[in-house]
Length: 131
Image (tube, rainbow, N blue to C red; front, side, top):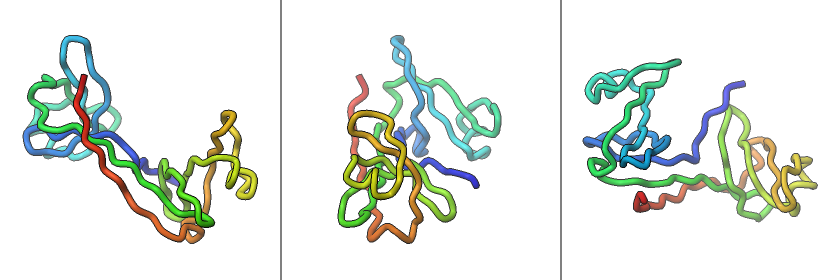
């Protein structure tokens, strides 16, 4: 089973929406893409099927975070990733015990649930200023 992250951070650089990875104190940000044609245009380097490059923070038009949510048994849950048939979710004990999820912290439970169990799925996008 292959999992795909769907809640991630992004940056718009030279008109392309790229994955935001990291930054340096010198004002550079590490951006990535899986699209080889975009990588060639931006001069990114390939490693394990992913293309990445450091760019000046000032040249990034926008930073954003896209988070996916679902409604499970009437409760809003955070969706971390998805496979063909399941969502990997994070929630509290209200659903954690009922859905037999793994407790990872005092109030956090993680695990997988069938996509068919979700009543509704949506995304929320937030823009932010890079420090």
